[in-house]
Amino acid sequence: MNTNQQMPATQNDAWGFWGTMNEHASTAWPLAMTAISDATGQPLESVRVFLDSRHGRHFADDLQNGLYRGQTLADAINAATQQWMGWTIGRQTSKQYGIPRGLPYLTGFVIHCEIAEESIAA
Image (tube, rainbow, N blue to C red; front, side, top):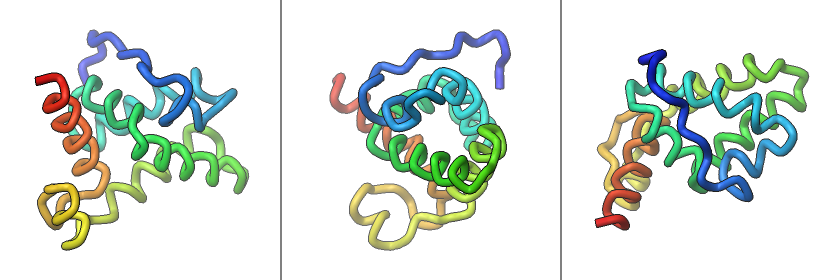
């Protein structure tokens, strides 16, 4: 990740990742942004769009589960990132979202969210 790049702020503090992380949001945000960007190779702005989406809320649910199991915040973020990278896009998800089959789930949804936001802005 380019360390000179500004960390994008959430544009959805009520829902998505930020809203789900509650009191952990401000600490978890830069850790999750960096972990996801590093894992997927996608820019921070694309990761921001993903985390602000309903998919980001589901990602945060996995972090909350890790915290509930006693993991540190950093360990929960790394575990969720690895889990989402380990899953692959299947036939039904590919058909529903237009994400290529076999792509890591996390990569696919980060890219999908960015494309969806661009198409709304266009």
